[in-house]
Length: 394
Ligand code: ADP
Image (cartoon, rainbow, N blue to C red; front, side):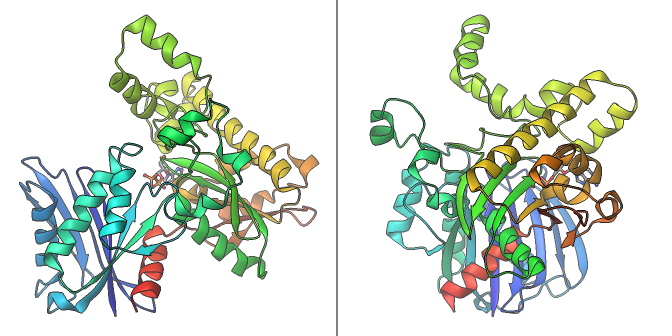
């Protein structure tokens, strides 16, 4: 059975075709710059890669182009469109309505629309992706997999903000958390390495977007992102935690509008804002080595924030079996892992530097004296979506 996984952004569509139940990737690709004159598709199928540059006006046209590649005699992996029996859609915000992945019907679409205000960039794009697929694949089952649903197990005292209660009742203002598909998948893979049926795990998903999650026996009990993905860690371009009074202060000082302020916090802050060099960890590491003080500061802040969250989640969980690193930075950068975990022996955290320096997927890197296991696990959100989709659609 072939499952298509679609991650539809505001101007892009990422996709993968999985052969299920083996979860083997048959084809994958990325269409970027939808709506521009030079939209770009990079498609890999049949172990060959093809790049196409042409104007694609909207997501529906984009899905048409993607299907033409999937059906292509050279690069394609299907002979007829009906071979795609199910489509899994990544949906960013499922609010309080969805505690797990779900088959899409009209009521599900309405609920996703309801959370558009909380995710104005992502949810509309996700819906466009669903509609474009529905048009083309009349008989395929559609499944929604939410970034938020794994965190719906957080207790009230963790998800509420200490604001007037009416804002929760009227406007759904609370913490939702994101990266849930990744945290859940990585937890499952960690259990295999730990050889345990259940465990208390702290997952650090460190990519361009970054979040930490405290998982107690399979349930998310706290996570660093909040109402939106802006809260928590220092990210590529997002500020993460700060005194909320800063927002009105800067708006008063600069005359920035709410939209401009939103852009400053989401797109101009974080590693980019502090370093004034880049949002990309690799560039900042190079500049730090060259002696750039702001690059060093950005890295110090990034690592210190993750360390503080790990400490607070140890307190929240009481007992921790493992700390797991994932995402582009978490999986690939032993130096950052070391900098985050350094000097935490009091918590039973001790790194084996040799193991850390060569740790790849599923590799433990704690020293033999450590009380808490340390693991690198490669995340695979698309595979996790394919598995949920297959289970619901089969
Ligand atoms: P996204 O949140 O966009 O999915 P990724 O998980 O792909 O992001 O992570 C992107 C980040 O990972 C970038 O900051 C990049 O510099 C960093 N990264 C990727 N490879 C390495 C590496 N080998 N060493 C350090 N950082 C890396």
